[in-house]
Length: 285
View (tube, rainbow, N blue to C red):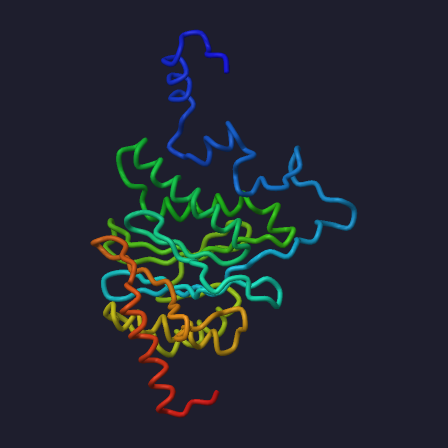
């Protein structure tokens, strides 16, 4: 590789001059082929063959995510199953991740692309903090994520959609907030609780009955586990707590102290409590 005139200092100066507070914008200018939405992209923008977009190949899909506010923060939980058509592609997939110290991200949709978007979003927030010397506001984080989802629109039209759920603690307003998205990058603030993914209709119905204002953290964890249990009851793409394999949902809470992953011992106790109560009640439907 030929070094430009001026040596390493000139290279650094060139990079610093072109850098912005948004890592994804910098990447779009310098190496757009590395963006998640660029996979299979056609030069010149969206161009499809006659008859419309090509059908997407069979790929693993991540399913149900639930989120809710509780006293002092927010909680997000995801089941562990990924499906590919009628096949269980994985029983161990993780769908909820810390985005930064005060926010979490849950993914539903095409698993590989969703994981790429998650990694890019994590780098985006870390990059902003290093360039600006401060955290991006929660509103700003939600907007940045929407722009990334919009960048995946071409693949979404081919059936490779990514639909995240975003939650965090707003350090300016001192409260937890939830945001949902559509495949075009449209951002919507949700109140109290929300769910996305194939089992979301069942999980949301469960949350409507179980959620109450100002739940404490332990009660919120129990509600999330039970909502995912209800979703798994009626949606084959959602995996319930697996007592045999000792697999439990991935659950994060975020409050003024930051993001915390709930230990598996607490999740096991919550799941076993839900199962025991339904066993005693002789629940059928």
